[in-house]
Structure formats: structure tokens, C-alpha cells
Image (cartoon, rainbow, N blue to C red; front, top):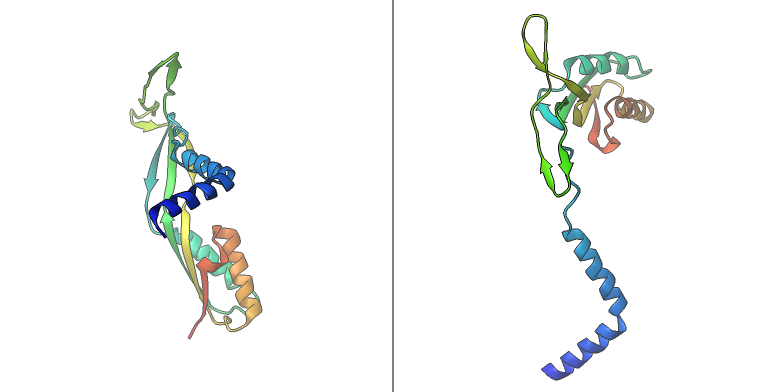
Length: 166
């Protein structure tokens, strides 16, 4: 085919599917729009640390109580540590001009020490869990362990591995 026939065929297809092309174009334009502005009145601080030993110990004790589980060991890994959101002064907008103040709201304790005003503490986000137990060869025990770990950590079942202890 030569260039003229390709051009003619292209125009015919564009006319036939013009509404589909408009919807695709509108979708592409929406993808290019910027997302909403992040909240300016909070600051986040991420504390990265290993998984809470207390949670691992608690899970070990609880999971060992499952009928048929036997001896249990638990390892949790974190994708992100605990996040602490501090309260800060809010931005003020007047007409087209905006005045941004990002100074922290600070509390003074009786001993003269300064600390930020904590607005919210978000729990750690877990990446995965490994559970090793004596009864892992039993499907009911394995399912019970996976359900228990899911409910405590918020992990999906594909992020939890249950293995038989030697």
C-alpha cells in the first residue's frame, strides 16, 4: 500500500471510532492533571526500626496455643516503621496570595524540654511474616495460623509463609 491509501484508511477509521478516540484522549488528559495538594498542616516523621519484638513474642505465644501447632517461632518484617504526625500551623489563603507558615507547634514540659505536639501515631506497615511451627504439615493448623497473623498484622495471606519446624 502506498502512503495515500494508508492516509485514507486512517481517516476513515478515525471518523468511525471518533468517540472512542475522544474518550482515550480525555483519559490521557486526566492522567496529566496534577493530584491534589498534600496536607500542609501536618509533618510526618518515619521511625524505621525492626519489627516490634513484643508483637513477635505475643504472636509466638498465641500461635503456640492453637491446637496442633506445637512449638512456634515468628519473624515479622516491616516495610515502614511507625509514623508520627506532628501538629503544625495551618496555611492561610487570601484571594490569590497564600501565606505559608510551617513552624511547628511546640510544647514545653515542666523541665524546660521542648517536644512537638503529636497529632497522630500510625502503626508500622508490615511487609511479610514467616511462621515456623511443628504442626505446619496439617492444613487446618496452617490455615488457622495464617488467619491469626492476617488479623494481627493486616498482611495478605500471600505475604505469610508457614513452614514446618525440624
